[in-house]
Length: 295
Image (cartoon, rainbow, N blue to C red; front, side, top):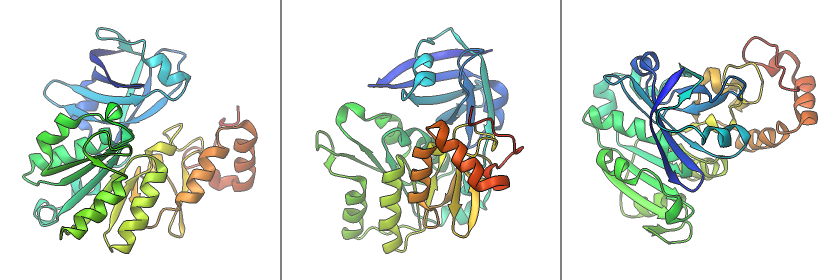
């Protein structure tokens, strides 16, 4: 059982929990995720880590309510407990394991959309703690759906806010802000973008034209989180990868976004899951090879 130290509603259908999980906190790095179960019989939900405090032994997660499992989580308040809180899982962001002087020599641009702000935050914070200021673009549909603005301001070199409806900050999509920054003479060595699949696709189409290497997180397509269900199977260049065991971060210019989004829709139905399992055979799984996902 994992005690909830803090519970808060950040925006409509978006919630934050700070959870007491010392072993996870002592080992996790930016880019990784945890698998959470609210109750003993609850759905297992993979969630990217939003923040962690090794001294306090806490891990922060941010969740958007999109189904029964995430809705049931909203009943848990400060002082309650998560039944399971497993991790860290997945591979850390590349820069965590690189030579720090090499990392310091780069100019980073982060592009976050909606809930993607949460997993972008620990990466920007890590860089800030190592003396590296990154530029950050945060996009939301409206001002009311914007999250973690103050936290991001504290760690970003420059923070650019944009809303689709122009209700706050700049007006328009995050791609427009990238274009504006380049028009102003800004140059970057690497871009990291996390958010809805369609947003990451169009950011990557733009950065490919700009010849700007781009990393994406494929956490949105994960279901089981251990490689056993086949949901997050995707094509990266000429290779088949699984977001949960090989990622969740990949070279965005190599990711087949159209294929991943089509698969995401198919996997929502029993018939779709059965079709994918039959078509892909032994390559359907990235783990033990026993899906059960069609049940």
